[in-house]
Image (cartoon, rainbow, N blue to C red; front, side, top):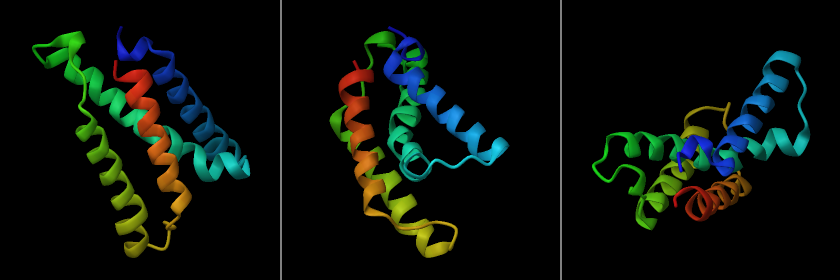
Length: 116
């Protein structure tokens, strides 16, 4: 199945888009959603797009899957950049342990529901 047709991919993309429209266009900030939804959806969206591109260009096509190590490295990278480096570099970013938990849950969703 195409990643783009997988509901575990396209529903997070739609939720992310809707959340951004509410925040940026209408100034509506729902507390928990504003703080954690983007973090929860980040890994499935980032790796979902990346997986689909790999399936277009890799010789295995639709059979291509990321290994657990690849997903872990993506999780680690996003966590270090957004919860380590950027808060140190700019006051616009806030270091939050719960964000890392959201990245981890998103990585698990990606691994079990999209990367198949």
